[in-house]
Structures are given as C-alpha cells and as structure tokens.
Image (cartoon, rainbow, N blue to C red; front, side, top):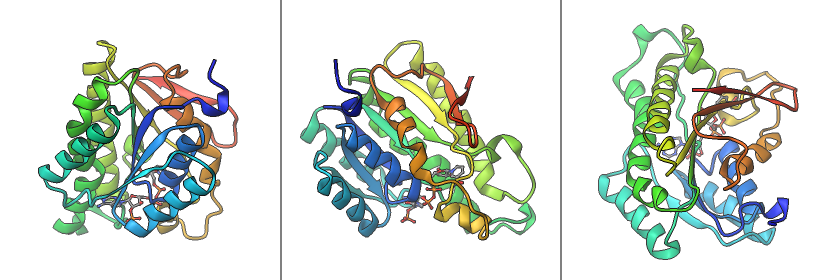
Amino acid sequence: MTPANLALDGRIVLVAGAGGDLGAVAAEACASAGATVILLGRTLAKLEASYDRIVQRGGPVPLLAPMDLAAATPEQFGAITASIESQFGALHGLIHCAAHMDYLGPLRDVTDNQWSQALDVNLSGAFRLTRSLLPLLTASEAAAAVFVTDTEAERRRGYWGPYAVAKAGLEAFARILADEYGSAGSLRVNLFAPGPIGTRLRRKAFPAEAAANPAALAPYFIDLMRSDSPYANGVRVAPASGQPSVIEENF
Ligand SMILES: NC(=O)c1ccc[n+]([C@@H]2O[C@H](COP(=O)([O-])OP(=O)(O)OC[C@H]3O[C@@H](n4cnc5c(N)ncnc54)[C@H](OP(=O)(O)O)[C@@H]3O)[C@@H](O)[C@H]2O)c1
C-alpha cells in the first residue's frame, strides 16, 4: 500500500495559479505527497519561489509554466499540453486556483476592462485550459479536476461584481463537465470552496480581517487528487470554518 504521505507518488498534477497563496499551498501539498507538479501562473518569480521550496524539501522536480490566462492564445494552451505529454506522457490532475478580483462595487460602475479580466481569468481561462488538457486527462488513470470556487458564487450578493458572476459561471461549467465525464468514469470533476482564508485576494476585500491560514487546507488537495480519493465525482467540498469535517454537497 502507498504510504499516506506519498499518496500521489508517480502522479502528474497541474496547478493553475500556483504562484498565489492558496495555489502554492495546493502545489506544495501535492509535491509533498509525491506528485510531480506543473506550476502554471502569471508571475514567473512567484512560480520559481514555489519551485525552490519543493526542491529544497526533496519533492519531485516541478515544471514551470508561466502563462497569463487572460491573454493566452490557443497555441500557448496547445504548447503546454504538448509539453506535458512529451515530458510525462500523462496528466492525472488539474487544480484551478487562479483568480482575478480587482473590483468590488455596484455593477453599474464596472468598466469593460474589469468585466473582461474577471471573466477571462476566472471562467474563460479555466474553460480554455481544461479544454486543452482534457484529452490528456481522460487518457490518464483515475484523473481528477478541481475548480476552486467561492461562496459568493452562490450568495449572489450586491457589490461582489464580475468576480462573483464569473465564479457562478465556473460552478456551472464544473457541474456540466462532471455530468459529461463523471458517469463515463474517465474524469472526476469537483468544486472546492475554501471559505475565508488569509490570502492576498481576501485582503483586497477585508484588509483588517484575521482570516485562517491557507496552509490548513493542504490535506484537501491531496485527498481530491489521489486515485483512491474519498471524493466521488460531482462534489462541492467546503471545509467548514473551524471544523475538522467538511460539508459535501453532491451536484
Ligand atoms: N482567499 C479567500 O478567502 C478565498 C475565498 C474563496 C475562494 N477563494 C479562491 O481561492 C483561489 C486562490 O486565491 P487566493 O485567495 O490564493 O488569492 P491569490 O493569492 O491572489 O492567488 C490568485 C492567483 O491567481 C493568479 N492570477 C491572477 N490573474 C491571472 C492571470 N491573468 N493569469 C494567470 N494567473 C492569474 C495570480 O497570479 P499573480 O500572482 O501573477 O497575480 C495568483 O497567483 C481563487 O480561485 C479564489 O477565488 C479564495
């Protein structure tokens, strides 16, 4: 039996937004469990910092994949997919953590650029990246895709702007994907709603809040990615604040 701490031994996992606070936790958790991670994100220096931590801890050497999800061309998505296929021959996991939120306020004041950026990164970027990787994912053993969402997707409260609209779209996208692939057994698709955590994104909305440390969520990413995952297809995993258990809602 694979030791619990190497539950992802031999698996290849791509983390989009790996330079972010939660994305780095996800990537480094997967690497600590034995996965080779592909660190995809916009800012190379942040990806390199995560790369260095993984290598220093003795994890499998990651692959760096700098990419601006809002501006990437079909050729760039294709190049990442081709590179993973040629170097590893498989992709067992996709964790989509990348997110853009630079506007909180009434919808009437959203600029075209603010709207486009939020939709391009949080929704269309996730779709385009996933579409490109799907052939590789579905050909790999016990593959899983996880999309990090936000409770604001469901609340649909005023002043959360295009970020919440995009997250609602991301949830719809994940649910449809889960329906298309889960029943065929070729890909598990789940949502992960982390709740409030102390990251750069959260501090933009709540600068004075003492939110939870994202590092506490590391075990969830390992469990979501493992081939013997406790999470079946079409589950919205929401760690309950301050509780050791999770709320699991089937789509
Ligand atoms: N923090 C919370 O309380 C909370 C609550 C619910 C859900 N979430 C979700 O958790 C996930 C992780 O966010 P976080 O809280 O860790 O925030 P974060 O630290 O700001 O991370 C967001 C990441 O997305 C990347 N990104 C933004 N625009 C991009 C683009 N155009 N192309 C590629 N990457 C881009 C950022 O890259 P750069 O480093 O280059 O900017 C950053 O690495 C997000 O999906 C967020 O919606 C967070």
